[in-house]
Amino acid sequence: MTHEADDVNEAIEGELRLLDPAVRSSRDEALRLFDPEFVEVGASGRHYTYEETVAGLPDQPGSSADGPRYEPSAFTGVLLAPGLVHLTYETVFDGRRARRSSLWRRRDAETGWRMYYHQGTPVPPGAD
Figure 1 (tube, helix red, strand yellow):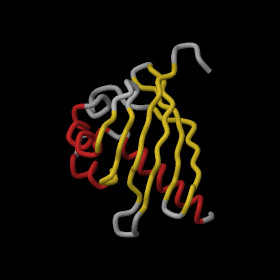
Figure 2 (tube, helix red, strand yellow):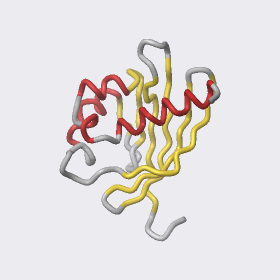
Figure 3 (tube, helix red, strand yellow):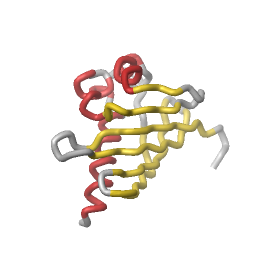
Figure 4 (cartoon, one colour):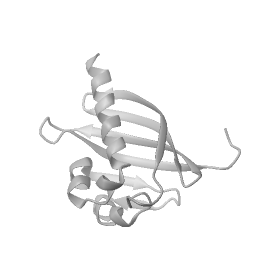
């Protein structure tokens, strides 16, 4: 496996961890996976900061072990530059599809890969 493939796979592993209810409900786990400069543009167009995301994640959908879970598929990833991976994939959550894009950044080996940017776009019913 190439170094590029290793980096992409590590970013995918981080993304999958952030979809896990046990990780989503744990502030400590979330802190390990979000870059301190993280931002998100939500489906509503609202901008979310690192602080808002980490504080609110346990209350967001998909954070309860007994509730609906995100079902991810169709991951693709590209190493854009050393320490920067772009992922795209789809999720189904409670019957609703979304296309997702995220940037993962690795500043050093100690902190590892962390999500730097995320955007999710709802897919209307019947759209390809």
